[in-house]
Amino acid sequence: MQALIIAAQEIRVGLRNRWVLATTLVMAALALSLALLGSAPTGAVKADPLAVVVVSLASLTIFLVPLIALLLSFDAIVGEQERGTLMLLLSYPVSRWQVVLGKGLGHVAILAIATVLGYSAAAIALSLKGGVGAAAWQAYAAMVLTSVMLGAAFVAMGCLASALVRERATAAGLAVGVWLFFVLLYDTALLGVLVADQGRILGQAQLDALLFLNPTDVYRLFNMTASESVSVYSGMAGPGDPTASPPAAYIGALALWIIVPLAAAIVAFRRRAL
Amino acid sequence: MTPVAEWRAATKRYRDVTAVEQVSLRLEAGEATALVGHNGAGKTTLIKMLLGLIRPSEGSVVIGGADPAGAQGAPARRKIGFLPENVAFHGAMTGNELMAFYARLKGESRRRNAELLARVGIAHAADRRVATYSKGMRQRLGIAQALIGEPRLLLFDEPTSGLDPDSRREVYEMIDRLRENGATVLISTHALSEIEPRVDRIAIVHRGRLLAAGTLAALRSRLAADARMRVRARRCSTGKLLAMLPQAVRCEERSDSALTLTVPSHAKMLALRAIVEAGELVDDIEISAPGLQELYTQLTGAAEENESCKR
Image (cartoon, rainbow over all chains, first blue to last red; front, top):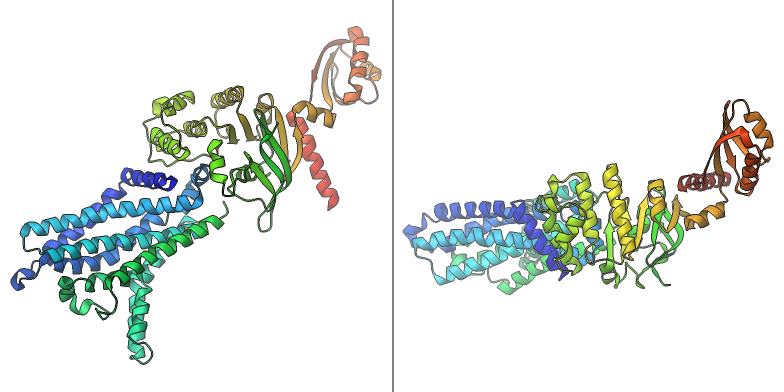
């Protein structure tokens, strides 16, 4: 209950300082431009335009959603402490885990509002042009849901960074590092290792395991391969063997990527001296 | 009488500093206690312990029968109002919105919020963003949030720091009213003379140690502090007057027609009698009992001496 009160307050603050508005607009603008420009060539080959958009939008999400999530959450604990509002909050009948959970929930809710509204705008724009099949709708809905989950994973990591360090600037740096590592460096490094290895040590199973260690890869695999109607277009974009893991495994992995960092953030915050 | 809150030989050590050492103190129901000390003496650390924000390294803290940092800590905090030193709020929200949030957290109705804001004198600014508030207004909002739900225990950490004299007076008047309504109040401060008439008990902390605690009268008698006398005498008669006074009286200042004397408490009556006997030589006399400030200076001074002796 206390966590929900704190979450509601975070959303209210997000509405007030226009975080919600700004992120919704950014998401909607990018989704719309991808939807309208990116689906243009599909008319000739009679492809489902929404299914094509799922592929391009998922690639965009991997860059954008973690960034927004980290920007929202790196401030959660250390920012309150630096502003001097944390001590007052903790003098109320709330536990520390409720503060972390409430902040996390609030940030995920802000992200969810922006994602659902922004991406829905693109879907509606496309469906007005016609030719969207039920399977593509399903894949689109799954993409929106997993986008929110991906955001939640990075919100959890942002909260962890915020609970670990003493200064806001350090938390910001850590958040940038997390983004660079998971979004840019991890895949490049993995590719480099694979090239160097030439399949001598790393087999398919090891590669799958390594991909599960990065939430953005889990997200990519799910959205590129989970749906028949989409995997056709993603083609080579799917880095793994499409039959390797069932969709539920990806969802489960994303859920773990939310729960584990959040639990770690709670532990770190409980140990934190004020 | 059961204490509302209690420190039992509480010690708090950080890596290489001891912030609080072996402090035992009780806050009795319905009493106002002043926690007095220099900056960094350990006042805020003591309050943080009471709120369960930090755990004592040794000893324990009890509030309403529970350990504030334990599993029952959160419910125990429901009946506490706290005003932190340098209170801050989220600037984007209005006074009303923040009060609603804090009332929800305490599980209290929001109906009395407007009344509370009026009581601290910022009802006119209730719908303005807190970022536009002055320091004094933020402090008042801080007091208003502490009063949500009529807490039985109020903790004010430096409630008047940075306020203008008018605001200070109003803050003190508010504290007086809370006492009259039977709340237990703890005020940490270094504005000694201002707090003196407003509290039942005083606890003096210095470098993490509790130097003295008790009612002002009890502290005075324990210290047997010296009284100060200023005597205005007829011209050129101060020497004569000095000769009549008992030996224990020390002369601090002497001019042609005035004397400033330090009189130990045992010699006070003797000195007064001597002055009365001097008759026409004395024009006027002024006696001041030692206030909190003198007591404090004396106690902390003694503590410093002890420290240096040990070294």
